[in-house]
Image (cartoon, rainbow, N blue to C red):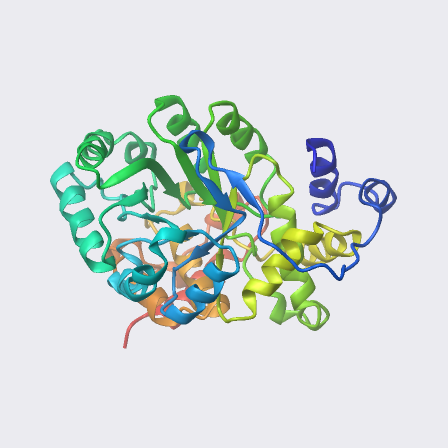
Length: 387
Protein backbone atom coordinates (compact mmCIF):
# COMPACT_ATOMS: atom_id res chain seq x y z
CA UNK A 1 0.00 0.00 0.00
CA UNK A 2 1.43 3.43 -0.91
CA UNK A 3 1.50 6.40 1.48
CA UNK A 4 -1.55 8.09 -0.10
CA UNK A 5 -3.74 5.08 0.63
CA UNK A 6 -2.19 4.72 4.08
CA UNK A 7 -3.15 8.28 4.90
CA UNK A 8 -6.71 7.65 3.76
CA UNK A 9 -7.03 4.60 6.01
CA UNK A 10 -5.51 6.44 8.93
CA UNK A 11 -7.78 9.43 8.63
CA UNK A 12 -10.88 7.25 8.61
CA UNK A 13 -9.73 5.63 11.83
CA UNK A 14 -9.72 9.06 13.47
CA UNK A 15 -13.08 10.06 12.03
CA UNK A 16 -11.58 12.67 9.73
CA UNK A 17 -12.39 11.27 6.31
CA UNK A 18 -15.62 10.36 4.62
CA UNK A 19 -16.47 6.72 4.09
CA UNK A 20 -16.91 7.32 0.38
CA UNK A 21 -13.32 8.48 -0.03
CA UNK A 22 -11.89 5.41 1.68
CA UNK A 23 -14.15 3.09 -0.27
CA UNK A 24 -12.81 4.53 -3.49
CA UNK A 25 -9.24 3.92 -2.33
CA UNK A 26 -9.73 0.45 -0.88
CA UNK A 27 -12.33 -1.05 -3.17
CA UNK A 28 -14.63 -1.84 -0.26
CA UNK A 29 -14.40 -4.75 2.13
CA UNK A 30 -11.69 -7.32 1.58
CA UNK A 31 -12.85 -10.74 0.49
CA UNK A 32 -11.33 -13.96 1.74
CA UNK A 33 -9.65 -15.96 -0.99
CA UNK A 34 -9.21 -19.68 -1.21
CA UNK A 35 -5.42 -19.46 -1.52
CA UNK A 36 -3.38 -20.41 1.57
CA UNK A 37 -2.28 -17.56 3.79
CA UNK A 38 1.48 -17.03 3.85
CA UNK A 39 3.73 -14.89 6.00
CA UNK A 40 5.20 -11.79 4.38
CA UNK A 41 8.55 -10.18 5.13
CA UNK A 42 10.11 -6.72 5.20
CA UNK A 43 13.71 -5.54 5.48
CA UNK A 44 14.65 -4.33 8.98
CA UNK A 45 16.46 -1.20 7.92
CA UNK A 46 20.23 -1.30 7.55
CA UNK A 47 20.47 -4.62 9.38
CA UNK A 48 19.42 -6.19 6.08
CA UNK A 49 17.46 -8.83 7.98
CA UNK A 50 14.23 -9.88 6.27
CA UNK A 51 11.84 -10.24 9.18
CA UNK A 52 8.23 -11.41 9.35
CA UNK A 53 5.57 -8.70 9.32
CA UNK A 54 4.37 -10.11 12.62
CA UNK A 55 6.95 -10.82 15.30
CA UNK A 56 6.50 -13.00 18.37
CA UNK A 57 6.15 -10.90 21.52
CA UNK A 58 6.87 -12.63 24.82
CA UNK A 59 5.64 -10.15 27.41
CA UNK A 60 3.31 -12.18 29.63
CA UNK A 61 3.99 -15.34 27.60
CA UNK A 62 5.26 -18.70 28.88
CA UNK A 63 3.71 -21.21 26.44
CA UNK A 64 6.59 -22.67 24.45
CA UNK A 65 4.45 -24.85 22.08
CA UNK A 66 2.74 -21.75 20.64
CA UNK A 67 6.10 -20.38 19.54
CA UNK A 68 6.90 -23.54 17.58
CA UNK A 69 3.59 -23.29 15.76
CA UNK A 70 4.25 -19.64 14.92
CA UNK A 71 7.73 -20.38 13.59
CA UNK A 72 6.41 -23.17 11.38
CA UNK A 73 3.91 -20.64 9.99
CA UNK A 74 6.72 -18.26 9.04
CA UNK A 75 7.26 -16.00 12.07
CA UNK A 76 11.02 -15.47 12.23
CA UNK A 77 11.51 -12.70 14.79
CA UNK A 78 11.19 -13.30 18.54
CA UNK A 79 11.13 -10.24 20.80
CA UNK A 80 11.84 -10.68 24.50
CA UNK A 81 13.58 -9.03 27.45
CA UNK A 82 15.53 -10.37 30.42
CA UNK A 83 13.20 -8.46 32.74
CA UNK A 84 9.93 -9.84 31.38
CA UNK A 85 8.23 -11.81 34.15
CA UNK A 86 11.47 -11.65 36.17
CA UNK A 87 13.22 -13.72 33.53
CA UNK A 88 10.45 -16.28 32.98
CA UNK A 89 9.99 -15.29 29.32
CA UNK A 90 13.61 -16.01 28.45
CA UNK A 91 13.52 -19.26 30.41
CA UNK A 92 10.44 -20.37 28.46
CA UNK A 93 12.15 -19.56 25.18
CA UNK A 94 15.10 -21.87 25.78
CA UNK A 95 13.49 -25.20 24.76
CA UNK A 96 11.94 -23.76 21.58
CA UNK A 97 15.06 -21.92 20.49
CA UNK A 98 17.06 -25.11 20.83
CA UNK A 99 14.91 -26.49 18.02
CA UNK A 100 14.32 -23.39 15.91
CA UNK A 101 17.41 -21.20 16.34
CA UNK A 102 18.36 -21.46 12.67
CA UNK A 103 14.90 -20.23 11.67
CA UNK A 104 14.54 -17.15 13.89
CA UNK A 105 16.16 -13.86 14.78
CA UNK A 106 16.22 -13.19 18.51
CA UNK A 107 15.83 -9.75 20.10
CA UNK A 108 16.42 -9.15 23.80
CA UNK A 109 17.88 -6.71 26.30
CA UNK A 110 17.25 -5.30 29.76
CA UNK A 111 15.23 -2.43 31.22
CA UNK A 112 17.26 0.75 30.82
CA UNK A 113 15.16 3.42 32.57
CA UNK A 114 17.62 3.46 35.50
CA UNK A 115 20.59 3.92 33.15
CA UNK A 116 22.44 0.63 33.67
CA UNK A 117 26.21 0.85 33.41
CA UNK A 118 28.40 -0.98 30.93
CA UNK A 119 29.43 -3.88 33.24
CA UNK A 120 25.78 -4.50 34.14
CA UNK A 121 24.70 -4.75 30.51
CA UNK A 122 27.58 -7.07 29.65
CA UNK A 123 26.87 -9.31 32.62
CA UNK A 124 23.13 -9.42 31.99
CA UNK A 125 23.69 -10.29 28.33
CA UNK A 126 25.83 -13.27 29.31
CA UNK A 127 23.07 -14.37 31.69
CA UNK A 128 20.44 -14.06 28.94
CA UNK A 129 22.50 -16.06 26.48
CA UNK A 130 22.99 -18.80 29.04
CA UNK A 131 19.30 -18.81 29.97
CA UNK A 132 18.16 -19.14 26.35
CA UNK A 133 20.98 -21.45 25.32
CA UNK A 134 22.28 -19.04 22.68
CA UNK A 135 25.72 -18.01 21.50
CA UNK A 136 24.58 -14.56 20.39
CA UNK A 137 21.63 -12.17 19.97
CA UNK A 138 20.74 -10.90 16.55
CA UNK A 139 19.36 -7.70 18.07
CA UNK A 140 20.36 -6.18 21.41
CA UNK A 141 17.65 -3.75 22.53
CA UNK A 142 17.57 -1.94 25.88
CA UNK A 143 13.89 -1.71 26.92
CA UNK A 144 11.69 0.76 28.81
CA UNK A 145 13.64 3.91 27.92
CA UNK A 146 11.74 6.71 29.63
CA UNK A 147 13.79 9.86 29.05
CA UNK A 148 16.22 11.33 26.54
CA UNK A 149 18.93 10.59 29.13
CA UNK A 150 18.11 6.89 28.82
CA UNK A 151 18.48 7.13 25.03
CA UNK A 152 21.82 8.96 25.25
CA UNK A 153 23.30 6.84 28.05
CA UNK A 154 26.90 6.44 26.80
CA UNK A 155 27.13 3.01 28.42
CA UNK A 156 24.75 1.59 25.79
CA UNK A 157 26.94 2.05 22.68
CA UNK A 158 30.08 1.31 24.72
CA UNK A 159 28.67 -2.01 25.97
CA UNK A 160 27.28 -2.89 22.56
CA UNK A 161 30.63 -2.43 20.83
CA UNK A 162 32.13 -4.95 23.24
CA UNK A 163 29.20 -7.33 22.68
CA UNK A 164 29.64 -7.03 18.93
CA UNK A 165 33.40 -7.52 19.08
CA UNK A 166 32.87 -10.66 21.16
CA UNK A 167 30.33 -12.01 18.66
CA UNK A 168 27.52 -11.86 21.21
CA UNK A 169 25.25 -9.28 19.52
CA UNK A 170 24.94 -8.07 15.93
CA UNK A 171 22.71 -4.98 15.90
CA UNK A 172 21.60 -2.33 18.38
CA UNK A 173 18.13 -0.92 19.00
CA UNK A 174 16.14 0.95 21.65
CA UNK A 175 12.58 0.50 22.91
CA UNK A 176 10.20 2.89 24.67
CA UNK A 177 6.62 3.30 25.89
CA UNK A 178 7.24 6.88 26.99
CA UNK A 179 4.88 9.74 26.39
CA UNK A 180 7.96 11.53 25.06
CA UNK A 181 8.72 8.79 22.55
CA UNK A 182 8.87 11.14 19.58
CA UNK A 183 11.62 13.51 20.81
CA UNK A 184 13.37 10.51 22.35
CA UNK A 185 13.36 8.42 19.19
CA UNK A 186 14.19 11.38 17.00
CA UNK A 187 17.26 11.77 19.19
CA UNK A 188 17.99 8.07 18.75
CA UNK A 189 17.86 8.56 14.97
CA UNK A 190 20.20 11.56 15.19
CA UNK A 191 22.74 9.66 17.31
CA UNK A 192 23.37 7.35 14.39
CA UNK A 193 24.32 4.18 16.25
CA UNK A 194 20.86 2.66 16.71
CA UNK A 195 19.91 0.25 13.93
CA UNK A 196 16.25 -0.09 14.91
CA UNK A 197 13.60 1.49 17.13
CA UNK A 198 10.63 -0.07 18.93
CA UNK A 199 7.61 1.80 20.24
CA UNK A 200 3.85 1.71 20.68
CA UNK A 201 1.70 2.59 17.67
CA UNK A 202 -2.03 2.35 17.03
CA UNK A 203 -4.90 4.00 15.22
CA UNK A 204 -5.82 6.20 18.21
CA UNK A 205 -2.48 7.96 18.69
CA UNK A 206 -0.55 7.80 15.48
CA UNK A 207 -0.57 11.07 13.55
CA UNK A 208 2.75 12.65 14.49
CA UNK A 209 4.48 9.27 14.56
CA UNK A 210 4.20 9.09 10.79
CA UNK A 211 6.93 11.73 10.49
CA UNK A 212 9.08 9.89 13.05
CA UNK A 213 8.84 6.64 11.11
CA UNK A 214 9.48 8.44 7.83
CA UNK A 215 12.71 9.88 9.29
CA UNK A 216 13.71 6.42 10.52
CA UNK A 217 13.19 5.01 7.03
CA UNK A 218 15.25 7.81 5.50
CA UNK A 219 18.11 6.88 7.85
CA UNK A 220 17.63 3.19 7.01
CA UNK A 221 16.54 2.38 10.58
CA UNK A 222 14.10 -0.46 11.15
CA UNK A 223 10.80 0.16 12.96
CA UNK A 224 9.06 -2.45 15.11
CA UNK A 225 5.79 -1.44 16.76
CA UNK A 226 3.68 -2.80 19.58
CA UNK A 227 0.50 -1.94 21.53
CA UNK A 228 -1.48 -1.88 18.28
CA UNK A 229 -4.63 -2.96 20.17
CA UNK A 230 -5.14 0.52 21.69
CA UNK A 231 -6.04 -0.82 25.11
CA UNK A 232 -7.82 -4.00 23.98
CA UNK A 233 -11.11 -2.91 25.57
CA UNK A 234 -13.61 -4.30 23.09
CA UNK A 235 -15.10 -6.61 25.75
CA UNK A 236 -16.65 -3.50 27.33
CA UNK A 237 -18.90 -2.88 24.30
CA UNK A 238 -21.05 -5.78 23.13
CA UNK A 239 -21.15 -4.75 19.48
CA UNK A 240 -17.35 -4.56 19.39
CA UNK A 241 -16.88 -7.75 21.38
CA UNK A 242 -19.01 -9.62 18.84
CA UNK A 243 -16.66 -8.37 16.12
CA UNK A 244 -13.53 -9.11 18.13
CA UNK A 245 -11.87 -11.27 15.47
CA UNK A 246 -12.44 -8.74 12.68
CA UNK A 247 -11.37 -5.87 14.96
CA UNK A 248 -8.12 -7.62 15.84
CA UNK A 249 -7.32 -8.19 12.19
CA UNK A 250 -8.16 -4.58 11.36
CA UNK A 251 -5.73 -3.30 14.01
CA UNK A 252 -2.94 -5.41 12.61
CA UNK A 253 -3.73 -4.49 8.99
CA UNK A 254 -3.87 -0.80 9.88
CA UNK A 255 -0.41 -0.82 11.47
CA UNK A 256 1.12 -2.73 8.58
CA UNK A 257 -0.46 -0.41 6.02
CA UNK A 258 2.28 2.07 6.97
CA UNK A 259 5.15 1.22 4.60
CA UNK A 260 7.68 2.55 7.10
CA UNK A 261 6.72 -0.05 9.72
CA UNK A 262 8.82 -3.21 9.46
CA UNK A 263 7.03 -5.55 11.86
CA UNK A 264 4.28 -5.61 14.49
CA UNK A 265 5.27 -7.27 17.75
CA UNK A 266 2.15 -9.21 18.71
CA UNK A 267 0.86 -11.31 21.58
CA UNK A 268 0.19 -14.97 20.74
CA UNK A 269 -2.34 -15.97 23.38
CA UNK A 270 -3.28 -19.25 21.70
CA UNK A 271 -2.68 -21.40 18.63
CA UNK A 272 -5.40 -19.60 16.68
CA UNK A 273 -3.63 -16.25 16.87
CA UNK A 274 -1.26 -17.02 14.01
CA UNK A 275 -4.13 -17.75 11.63
CA UNK A 276 -5.77 -14.46 12.54
CA UNK A 277 -2.54 -12.55 11.95
CA UNK A 278 -1.93 -14.26 8.61
CA UNK A 279 -5.45 -13.28 7.53
CA UNK A 280 -4.73 -9.65 8.42
CA UNK A 281 -1.42 -9.68 6.57
CA UNK A 282 -2.85 -11.18 3.40
CA UNK A 283 -6.13 -9.26 3.12
CA UNK A 284 -5.13 -5.77 4.23
CA UNK A 285 -7.41 -3.18 5.79
CA UNK A 286 -10.95 -3.33 4.42
CA UNK A 287 -13.61 -0.64 4.56
CA UNK A 288 -15.49 -2.66 7.19
CA UNK A 289 -12.31 -2.99 9.22
CA UNK A 290 -11.62 0.74 9.08
CA UNK A 291 -15.18 1.43 10.25
CA UNK A 292 -14.67 -0.94 13.20
CA UNK A 293 -11.57 1.01 14.19
CA UNK A 294 -13.56 4.22 14.04
CA UNK A 295 -16.31 2.73 16.24
CA UNK A 296 -13.70 1.65 18.75
CA UNK A 297 -12.13 5.11 18.76
CA UNK A 298 -15.46 6.77 19.41
CA UNK A 299 -16.25 4.35 22.24
CA UNK A 300 -12.98 4.88 24.14
CA UNK A 301 -11.62 8.23 23.03
CA UNK A 302 -12.22 9.88 26.42
CA UNK A 303 -11.25 6.91 28.62
CA UNK A 304 -8.23 5.37 26.90
CA UNK A 305 -4.92 6.59 28.32
CA UNK A 306 -2.39 7.17 25.55
CA UNK A 307 0.47 7.27 28.11
CA UNK A 308 1.33 10.71 26.76
CA UNK A 309 2.29 11.96 30.26
CA UNK A 310 0.77 15.40 29.56
CA UNK A 311 -0.75 15.34 33.04
CA UNK A 312 2.43 14.46 34.92
CA UNK A 313 3.75 17.99 35.32
CA UNK A 314 0.52 19.07 37.04
CA UNK A 315 0.65 16.36 39.72
CA UNK A 316 1.69 17.90 43.07
CA UNK A 317 2.59 14.46 44.44
CA UNK A 318 4.79 13.08 41.66
CA UNK A 319 2.47 10.21 40.71
CA UNK A 320 3.68 8.15 37.74
CA UNK A 321 0.36 8.33 35.94
CA UNK A 322 1.39 6.86 32.59
CA UNK A 323 3.07 3.74 33.97
CA UNK A 324 0.34 3.06 36.54
CA UNK A 325 -2.42 3.21 33.94
CA UNK A 326 -0.36 1.04 31.62
CA UNK A 327 -0.03 -1.57 34.40
CA UNK A 328 -3.77 -1.30 34.95
CA UNK A 329 -4.29 -2.12 31.26
CA UNK A 330 -2.00 -5.15 31.59
CA UNK A 331 -4.12 -6.35 34.53
CA UNK A 332 -7.62 -5.65 33.20
CA UNK A 333 -7.34 -6.09 29.44
CA UNK A 334 -4.23 -8.20 28.78
CA UNK A 335 -4.72 -10.74 31.54
CA UNK A 336 -1.17 -10.27 32.85
CA UNK A 337 -2.27 -9.88 36.47
CA UNK A 338 0.88 -11.08 38.24
CA UNK A 339 3.22 -9.16 35.96
CA UNK A 340 1.16 -5.99 36.34
CA UNK A 341 1.25 -6.25 40.12
CA UNK A 342 4.97 -6.96 40.09
CA UNK A 343 5.64 -3.90 37.92
CA UNK A 344 3.50 -1.75 40.21
CA UNK A 345 5.35 -3.04 43.27
CA UNK A 346 8.64 -1.90 41.72
CA UNK A 347 7.48 1.72 41.58
CA UNK A 348 8.97 3.97 44.28
CA UNK A 349 6.37 4.65 46.99
CA UNK A 350 6.31 8.34 46.10
CA UNK A 351 5.13 7.58 42.56
CA UNK A 352 2.02 5.68 43.67
CA UNK A 353 -1.43 7.32 43.91
CA UNK A 354 -1.64 7.42 47.70
CA UNK A 355 -2.77 11.07 47.77
CA UNK A 356 -5.21 10.99 44.88
CA UNK A 357 -8.43 10.61 46.85
CA UNK A 358 -8.03 13.97 48.58
CA UNK A 359 -6.35 15.73 45.67
CA UNK A 360 -8.26 18.29 43.50
CA UNK A 361 -6.87 16.41 40.46
CA UNK A 362 -5.20 19.18 38.44
CA UNK A 363 -3.96 16.37 36.17
CA UNK A 364 -7.40 16.06 34.63
CA UNK A 365 -7.33 19.63 33.34
CA UNK A 366 -4.23 18.87 31.30
CA UNK A 367 -5.40 15.59 29.78
CA UNK A 368 -5.97 16.30 26.07
CA UNK A 369 -8.57 13.54 25.92
CA UNK A 370 -10.63 14.36 29.02
CA UNK A 371 -9.84 11.24 31.05
CA UNK A 372 -11.17 10.85 34.57
CA UNK A 373 -7.58 10.34 35.64
CA UNK A 374 -8.07 10.32 39.40
CA UNK A 375 -10.75 7.62 39.30
CA UNK A 376 -8.59 5.47 37.06
CA UNK A 377 -5.59 5.87 39.36
CA UNK A 378 -7.60 4.95 42.43
CA UNK A 379 -8.94 1.85 40.68
CA UNK A 380 -5.41 0.94 39.64
CA UNK A 381 -4.15 1.25 43.20
CA UNK A 382 -6.92 -1.02 44.45
CA UNK A 383 -6.32 -3.83 41.96
CA UNK A 384 -2.54 -3.65 41.66
CA UNK A 385 -1.57 -3.44 45.33
CA UNK A 386 0.01 -6.69 46.47
CA UNK A 387 -1.72 -8.40 49.40
